[in-house]
Length: 252
Image (cartoon, rainbow, N blue to C red; front, side, top):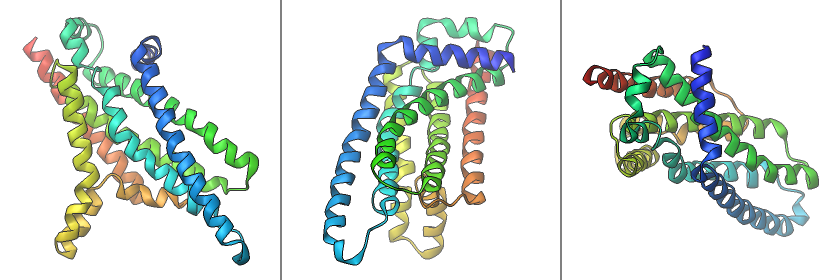
């Protein structure tokens, strides 16, 4: 476990000592701020129109769709987190040093994954400043907010596990980032394909969609089937990464 934490700490520090890490954090905060203002404006308009009918639910009309838009932000920015994880080490030649060090493939993979998801958690923490404004001036329910962020963390873990696998297959960061974005996009729109298919196929494609499983988290519901799906997806992504790294070790 010490080796895993050492690698995770190294990866996490790498994000904060490089300009790319701060650029990603700035873009994440900027895009979230844009969606925050857009949904806040819509919520204020709806509140003014519904003055005669009583207050409207801020969680349902603002916070829930706002957190759902984080999935769209992840689509564009998370590939920038994972694209250099292995590709840069292959390009610079440090992958051989890492693979010949006294650590196992599993420790390397878990360390890099924990480092990446730690940085992603830091990005989500920045967005909590915006949510804090709503708690300061409004009265939203805190449970749906917590479950929503828990769902975002699981969803991000799925994206990151896929990104790490793709990064482990190439030494070109641009190729890794572009391929990761394409895969993320497919995982995003896969449920759309079911709209033109039969009910059975539609239910299957919905279940495979990463975004579809987040909906209940935004409502404040933690369903075990969604948690199992996300954890299984992460495990499968890390398993593929381990096989890819193991292949690289044998080639070396």
